[in-house]
Length: 311
Image 1: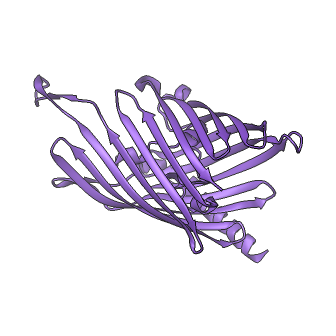
Image 2 (image 1 turned 90 degrees about the horizontal axis):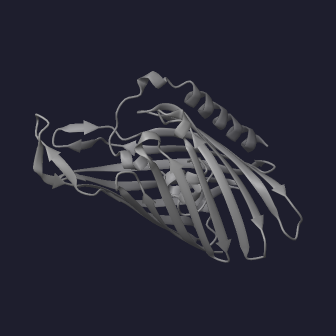
Image 3 (image 1 turned 120 degrees about the vertical axis):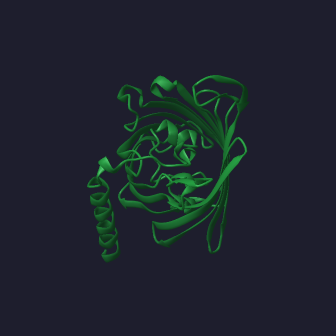
């Protein structure tokens, strides 16, 4: 009981810090690709990922790695606006001492026209790319309580110019702190400036506090339910924003489960375009998820994630 009260106190202190953060301090940051949600399931849930589990948790809250029972492998392809493509590969393996994860994120653009300082188009083009290589670790320190962290090596390239930096994520997840309620706390993108030549920008440092509640529905032989999840975030470049998600799932056979998802995020300038939708199918060790996200005037993004989960 004492440990549970201590953790509740930590959650309360963190929530107060997040909510009381001054959003007027929002500014610019580098390595913006780190803010693009990589997993189709979490993207369909509005980006709410503080309590996520599996290898993809290294992007949201690395403490979620501890839920890997044996081996987890996920591959995501994101079709972003204006022919920007974003790919992610993550893998995690459980050992006696905890779970180790590895990830690769790679973003690339199509050719971009060049202009001179007067605004005249030149007969030349260039492209950009961003890469993040990550290594993570998580372990359960108490029944239901896990901690984790990961380090990422970043490489940003614009034409022939490159910038490199180290970035860290860390977090805590408390599973079923009350009945079917999970809580998560994470700090994302701690690290040095992303600097081109002599000009540098801070990384998009973000504090995240979230919860997910699982409401079982249906008969014991064909279980199903509803998961409601939400995150509150405080970022150094966008201020305070929130993510909301709802997932309906139904098990039709012992090996197959279907999912319908919806979500909303509040950090878009056009509030009417924060909606996301998605579906998923789990069959035995195979999982496939799809997500659609509205991006306002920029258009929309689609994601597909294929996973193998060996239990």
